[in-house]
Amino acid sequence: MLPHPCPLPEGEGVMIGLARRRESLILERPHSSGELPEATVIQKSNTPYDRDKRGTESLEARRADPTTKVSTAAEPTYVNEAERAAVAANREAILKSPSYKLAEVDIDFLSRKENRPLRMQLELLKTETMLRENGIDSTIVVFGGTQIVPREQAESVVREAKLNLQKAPNDPKLVRTVQRAERILAKCRFYDDAREFSRLVYMSQRVDDPRKLVIMTGGGPGIMEAANRGAFEVGAKSVGLNIDLPHEQEPNPYITPELCFQFHYFAMRKFHFVLRAAALVVFPGGFGTLDELFDTLCLRQTRRMQQIPVILYGREYWEPIINFKHLADEGVVDDEDLKLIDYAETPQQAWEIIAKTHGLK
Image 1 (cartoon, rainbow, N blue to C red):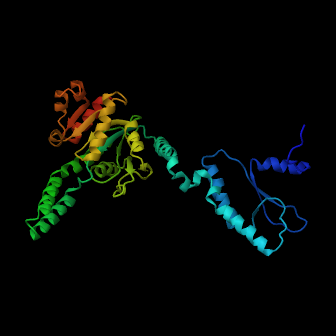
Image 2: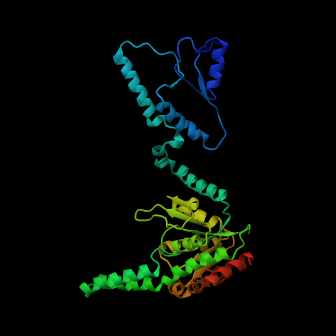
Image 3: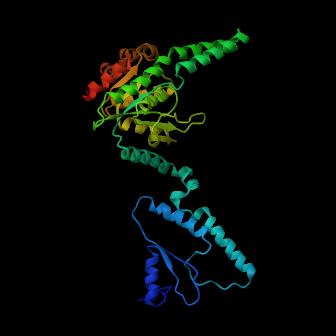
């Protein structure tokens, strides 16, 4: 048999020490002459995130304590102080090098383009884990426009727009601004209805019902704020799935803190909207609202998700926006597909559709 290229030192104590170094980190403190060193052993653990703590907290503790040094080979002999200083500087450079960071705490590394699949998986897993830990099994997803605000706020916008128009009554942009502001004011009732609907959802369910439905929104302003606000006002939990956008948006202040999530990837956010959905209630809104509506309708039409009611709130708004019957008349969707959509005009009607679908009283 060939000899080992790097023969191990003899001695039982050394062999035990080498074995232990595979499972733990031994820190030695300087000791007085004739005394044995005391060792602090950080044992291997199976507790969650222990690896993170060993990789960061223990390193910080070692650096913060100047009397502590990592157990290594004997101190080398230096030719002169210049060599000692060069070695010390190189050691510091090693400890600060990005390559020395644990991969799991290296944000720059995780942010690289080739690690996009890892980041998507983390967004999926983090939200799933925390929703389970909080017992969120079934949700009512509420969508709607971010521009639909409380009445007093909308009235203030209209007043300001009219004052600007008085200064330049022939400016077509200012005329258009007033028209748009008045249309938003006319839709303020939907903010109130979304708020009331959310209250009704919680007040209509038993506290101990294992099938308890929880409001989930996109976490932003407007209709989403109203739905989270209704839950907040009756002391109930609600979820907000916020999205990282260039021009928006801080989450609205009514979401349950431990149930407010931020996403970078729309795809992961969409997945969590439909995964636990027991119903989708769609208030008047724009492109984002339409996007989520058609995602859900497509999944329901192709039977790729659970059976849920898709409720369009406010027929007067929706029928001019989307002529679903015309799609069927043109033969591009089946007549049966039109049954995937329900309409509601009041919070009570919307809740009754959901309760009937799921056999709730």
